[in-house]
Length: 285
Image 1: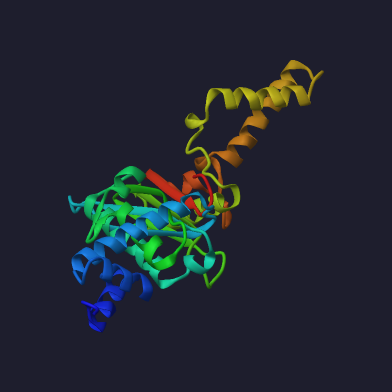
Image 2 (image 1 turned 90 degrees about the vertical axis):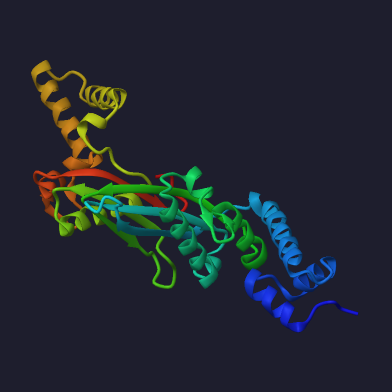
C-alpha cells in the first residue's frame, strides 16, 4: 500500500518541477518522507544535469539588475549570461525565472565575478545547486551560468538588446559613469552593446590601453604596404594609419554608433567611465 497521498505528489511536483513518475519513485524510495523524497529528486536532478554537461549551450539570455549602492551615493549594476541548449528553453518562463533568482542571489551577496556568483546563496542552496536542480528536474537541458559581472558609479545604466522579439536579450551591457548624465550614459551603453554584438568583444577603452605590440604591428603593416615612400611621407602615412586604427578600435576615439557627428570622448565631457561589463550569448566579452 502506498504511504503517500495525491496531495504529496502534487506538492512535490510544484516545489521541484519533477515529473509524475520521478516524484512517485522518490516517494516510494523515501517511504513517504517528503523531505527525503525532495533530497532524492535533487540528487537525481544534479546527476542528470552532470550527464548533460558536455552538450553545447549556444542559446540563452543576458539579464541585469541595478540597485542603489550601500553608501547611497552611487549605484551598482549586476549582469549575467545564462546559457541553454535551445532557444525554446531560453524563452521559457522557468528559465527566465531562474535568471531572476540568480540575479537576486548575486545582488544579495554582492558577487562581482563568476566564481562568487555560483557560490551565492539562494533559498534552496547555492546558485550552482539551483541551476543543477532546474536543469535536471524542470528543463532537461544543459544550463550554464557562463558569465557574471558588476559595475559601480554615480550613475549605472543598462542596455539589453534582442535579436528576435520572441526571445530574451542576447546581448547586454551595464555601464558606470561619474559626472555624466543618465541620458548620455544610456547612449554609451547602446554604443557598446552595438559594438559587442557586431564584433563579439569590446574595443580598447583608451589609447593608453592598446598594447605596445598591437601598435607596433599596425605601424609595421602600414610601412610594408607603402614601401619605397620617402621618410617624411612614410611618417604621415603611419600616423594616419594609427589614427584610423584608434577611431575603429578605441572607445574614446570612436564616433557614437547612432550619431557619427558625436565622439564618445565628447559625449562624456568632463565626466568619466568608471567601468563597463557586457556579455553576448555565445560570445567571449
